[in-house]
Length: 92
Image 1 (tube, rainbow, N blue to C red):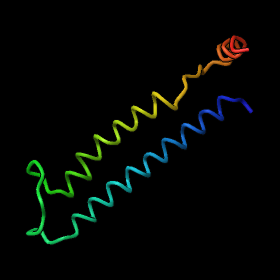
Image 2: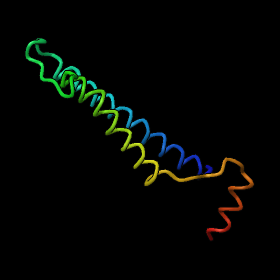
Image 3: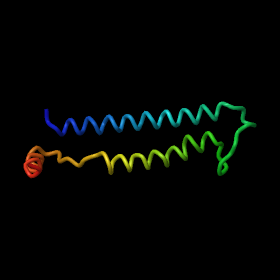
Image 4: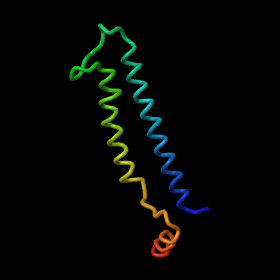
């Protein structure tokens, strides 16, 4: 099996994991804080707290996590077989 597939599969699973965590974050704040009567809502910057944490803060947090994940865990691999063989030979 081509080692590029192993790297690609790992990165894909990390991306799926981050997407699942984003959904859990959104769902927990949207339905956890948003399940109260409207009169009991707290507001942050004019937004209901459930909306602020699930949509605004969630977007910022997960944008930062995506940036960190790409910079730290993802590797740049060439798509062409010839280029990959050349770079593979240089690592030895």
